[in-house]
Image (cartoon, rainbow, N blue to C red; front, side, top):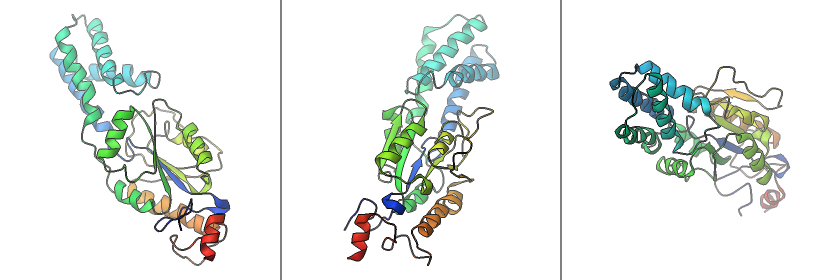
Length: 285
């Protein structure tokens, strides 16, 4: 018998009939992202250097104009090439250069390149998430262009891992997490958001636990802070294996104890006291 929180190979049961979930950021957490943008910065700097603009000045200007205007600029795929072209015109004015129409297609190509590179997962991300799927509902929560994000998740082999993928074009992941917690009857005390950004992902600490996995530092700013006094925990880890051992397994152990499983039984065994009504009925059978 399959219930909302229990099936032949999955047990997401929490006390009070709720379920446990892991919300997972994609870019910079599950998949390598920032090096592709860093490469685009370098290509842009090379073009500008050929035109007489110092490399460092070009990279700084692009960072100020593109990242400095986020999230107001938006996260659609075309925003990055637009930012590069805007920076080109800015530098032409600053360095008294005559803008060249023939340069624009080159800059557009540079700006589009990071979005459709072959996706590369961080070490052990797929393995850890595959194991976690047995005990948690897995929900991807990512900011970006829908077409691009779906492509990356599919090509990275993660589409079969996630129960749901939430893609947004604006920051404010905590609102999306709050809605999912309500809609799926998730217990936030035994769930967590896994992310690399204090600014973009850490805000979800207001809704559930936060597994801080700083594999990349994209879109971070000095002074970024996690929400205070939320009642939830922050697990600081260094890689995906560390996240599994020192955060995901801890949440699972705490959940088992809360369910009355004080004998160290497997979380895949029949649901313990405190499970949902459907699972209690299943257990009696």
